[in-house]
Image (cartoon, rainbow, N blue to C red; front, side, top):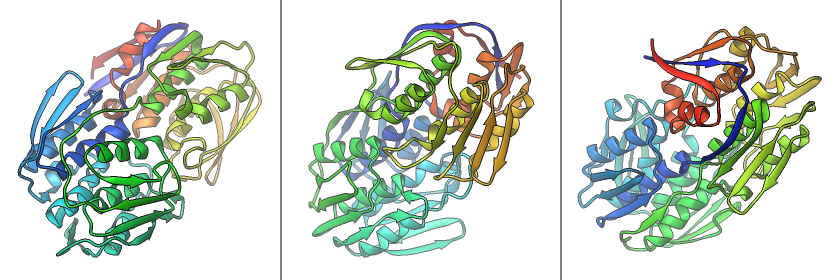
Amino acid sequence: MDKILVHGGNSLAGSIKISGSKNSALPILAATLLTREPCTIHRVPDLSDTNYMLQILNHLGAQVERASGTVTVSADKAQSVAPYEVVRKMRASVCVLGPLLGRCKEATVSLPGGCIIGDRPIDLHLKGFEALGAAVRVEGGNVKVFAPKLNGAVINLRGKFGPTVLGTDNVMMAAVLAEGTTVIEGAAQEPEVCDLADFLNKMGAKIEGAGTRRMIIEGVSELHGAEHDIIPDRIEAGTFLVAGAIAGKGVTVNRVNPDHLTAITTALSGCGFKIETKKQSLTVLPNGAPKPLEITTEPYPGFPTDMQAQMCALLSTTEGISVITENIFPQRYMHVAELKRMGAQVQMEGATAVISGVERLTGAPVMASDLRASAALVLAGLKAEGTTEVSRVYHIDRGYEHLDEKLSELGANIERVQA
């Protein structure tokens, strides 16, 4: 099992290109099951999660060809059962339920795995399928959905902690082949949801309102093949911007959509960092004395939960008292104990972290608990004195394409070693 060693003290400078979005690629790859015709997807990031999704598509009967960042999927035949051994490593595997239900009118998918960051139920997905006319059973660790036919319905997908992104994706993919019109109230507004809707419309779907809280889907009888470019990964971009804030002399992320990163750049500006914005790039410039900050994670367009851990790393060495409140996944603070091992001073009060900035962190052996926490520990290591040894880095490989190599390009002293 690999480890990443971060030798702190080097300054970052220069530019990198941001990969395609993981959270767009996974449901879009699943959506290729909705048609018998070939679909070609460009800018698919090289990640363990996308590789797992391609394995799932293969298991479900699709033919998959991959050449660099381009994937072609031909699902002339589609099986409707995805067992535990296929889906156990990735929570997003649940997003094959919607397209299989839409096309095959039935699906059996094992309850998925993924990051351990608290309770992430799929009850809203199932509520949406039931509203479309499907019967739902959960037994033996499997979710079974089936329907003689699907009918349009009015569905509200807002949950306790806000709209569900994967739930919106899943219900949208089932509804495109339902009879009649489906209205999704409380829909997730994330750019990744819009990206999926754009792809489905290219396939012949009729979806309006993506990016708003109310989506209208007019069902069609069948979809055809399409070609699509995945949007840039806004969380990867945000992570590198925070890296530039922590240890940079001017770091530029290229091939991004700045509009998708407004909440992150606003937070960095609030810390006192200057952000230069161009059409497809963002630059974070150094600041000798960053200021403390108060942040609350919220559904898009608010500050993303997927950037909370990275901001914890930045604010841990920012003088003064900073406060982060986690409104999406209140238990998503497993990185705090590891940051404390490096000398961070963080007091937890329920779902709120009160961070007292320290002058410096010290390198230490730390353990990654989930995808974004692992990135935060690497970022903290950039600023720490000595060497930070991050274990269980398979979490990083789930969502960051060559994170260590890109940081090396910017000047970090970082290496991947076998444990």
